Length: 212
Image (cartoon, rainbow, N blue to C red):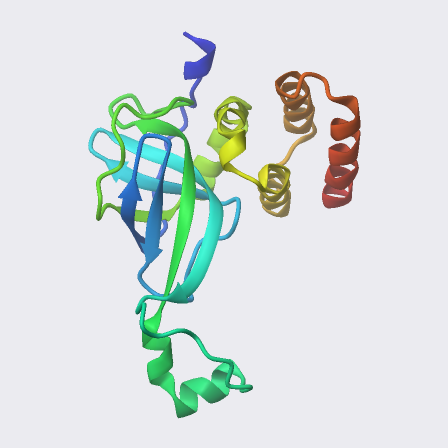
């Protein structure tokens, strides 16, 4: 089996609810709009979208909240959210939250395998999106091949190092980050960055604070 096609044989269940809908899509990623403006995925979280015979997997790289009406903009009322909900609940009806996802791989439903490749076709507009189950997250990030795709689109993500830290922090907070995973992560990142000693040293210093 090709290294880029290494996969998990674990049963990959999908047990979290949908909360957003794809509104823009290409092979590299997609943008989704949340059904509720204040219910959205966190930076660095793993998202899945059903795409026919595959389940597309990707990482949240940007989250943005604003007005969905170009003629109306949020205004500072100098009141708490609770006060605004009680006095002017209608102002929240004009808010929307979107998030951008970098695709990192997909699950072949027939084989129940994870492939660390861009999917053959982009996600369909109006496809539903949700956060991946813990089983998928653990299976996906135990291999470091996702870093290859992230690094290919480095120039499209100004928060690249922050994204890596967010991924590691989420894995650590869910008790999924093992010492072997960290060592593989360091080794792969070192190769992808051309053994940039200064950058790696600064980055690893920040990682150590997350994993203490």
